[in-house]
Structures are given as structure tokens and as C-alpha cells.
Image (cartoon, rainbow, N blue to C red):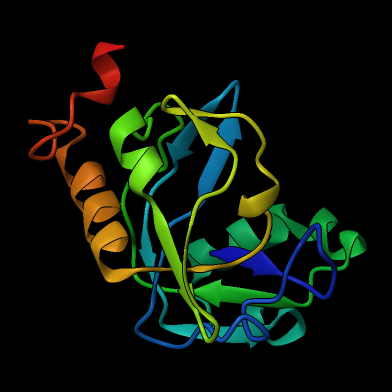
Length: 160
């Protein structure tokens, strides 16, 4: 489950154009590095109030655990099949960070505020953005390779 809402601090998946079948890749910026937390395929986006009746018992229990989020303006719940393991240790290698590209109706743009393989500011990451196909494939490969070999052309993020 992932949660969305109407505010910048908790953006709406629906407004961002997320649909069933899309793959979500949550990211975290910390101390000049970008971390890939995992990946999840979208099955449905439900209003928060309706999510409980569509969830399996185990997942409903998890939703109840996150009930305090409702006071923080959660309005939607993104549901999908089990995704990758949530991992806070997978770091995007500097070379990939410099090449990371997003796409929108206005065209493609690279990640801003990256210098010498370090993320100086995270402002261009705040929100929900669609990755360009090559960047999406590279991040997906990074997630798959965390426990095995690094993606071709990149060093292992755990070797830093």
C-alpha cells in the first residue's frame, strides 16, 4: 500500500496520472545520495474510506495501523500485488544519478541539482514524476541486482 492526498507533502497519485499497471518506485534523498526504496505495480487506486472493504484481512490490519495518516489528509490508497522488499540501503550510483531522466507532457528533463555524482538539493524530486524508459529500466535493474551483481556499467551501491 502507498498513500496519496491533496497536498504537496502527500501528493495525489490520481492527479499525477498514475494508473493500474504502472510501476511505482519510491525514492528517498539523504545526505547527497538518492536511495531506491523498492518498487510496486499498481493494481488500483481507491479512496481511503473504501480501501478497507477491498483488502485482504492481513492488509486491512496494516491499513488500521496507518489510520493516524488519515488525520494528515490521506485521501487515496494505492494497492498492488506484493512488490519488492522495502529497502533503505539501495543507493543510486553516481553515474546513474547524473543520467536519471524524467518525462512529462513538456518533454524530458534530467534530475536537477546533481554535481559530481551527488544530489545537492532534492527539490526536483518532491512529487510524483514519470521516469523516462531508460531510467525506469536502470532503476528496476538496480532493485533486481541489489542481492546479486550491479547493473552493467555501474558499481555496486553497497560497495561505497
